Length: 425
Picture 1 (cartoon, one colour):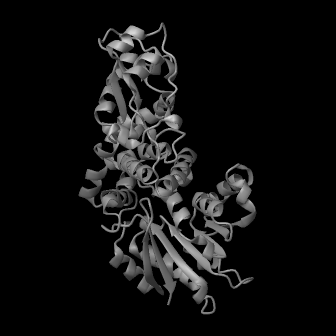
Picture 2 (picture 1 turned 90 degrees about the vertical axis):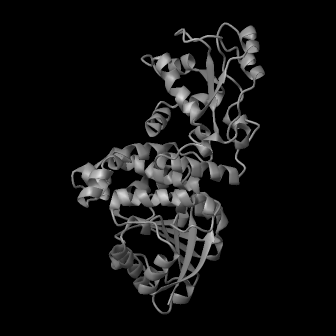
Picture 3 (picture 1 turned 45 degrees about the vertical axis):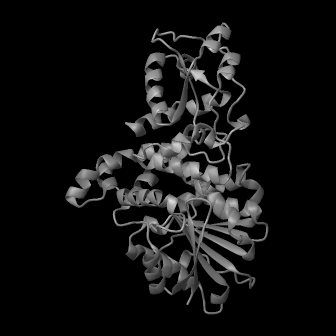
């Protein structure tokens, strides 16, 4: 139920409606659509407030005394709020993490705290009075409450630098596979395949444009939960070429290009992903300014003949990036992926090549406060792929050692990801 309420809040656009400040259920209902029942919406928002998804405040005597004929927009929205998440106690950070969506929101809150992002402010009585809030609801429920952004819902607004709204929509798409968890465990099957009638996860994405669009948008927002922190913190300028293997449409590579002016980028993925990427890099105002530094290459990570080798035109350092890739696959497939990349690196090139594996992992340290969310990510891999998983240090060392790589360093970021560096041996 908690997850369904969260999905509703996102799908109805309530966080963005609250950007202008506190609103009554009547006001929200009128802005959402003509068929929304204010009373029903208020009951749902009361529950949402109880678990920290939004803030709720009873109209005070001062507000009733000073109210005007109609409510007016409040000037204190996300962009101009003067308090950080601690202003409302960051209740969203302590809300129950009943599913992946709430877990990712909590990670978003941690990311926001680390970057000192302004999240939300609980309106004062004077604020409400100035906004002209009425004193009772149109449904006659009694005392009137106004709702405003909490730390959690602020992470769902379009103005938030750690926006998670598209990720929540993806989790709504994926919620049905968790409904099949009991049956799948009992029968030794993969939950997603039980839900889909036997289709593989990637097959489902390829055959459903709507699901593919939601997935792409959600993957782009993963940058808001640490991807941007990795791009900003890690010294990518020491490389001349950065090859993002299975990099989707290139959201993470774009962040590297924005922050680091030296390297050129190569985006490598399957044909369908590259076709979507071509449109973005050619026309999107965020991607297009960096397109001259990026080469798009279609292929298969399991086919070594299609993986881009280190450029022969220079002797500069090269990074192969696997970000959120290995956790999608069981060990046998991970060995194939790592071996394919290793076979692209000749003995001559070995000294200038580094492999960067960027994943949540299942390591308890570093960043122990994010450990529960790493385990949540592990369950998401289980539900979609069965034997795919988040891995610990020993498991990574075994994979690297069997494929001609050596783990040399593990670096935390300010977000959920760890950066594992490996070199050819």
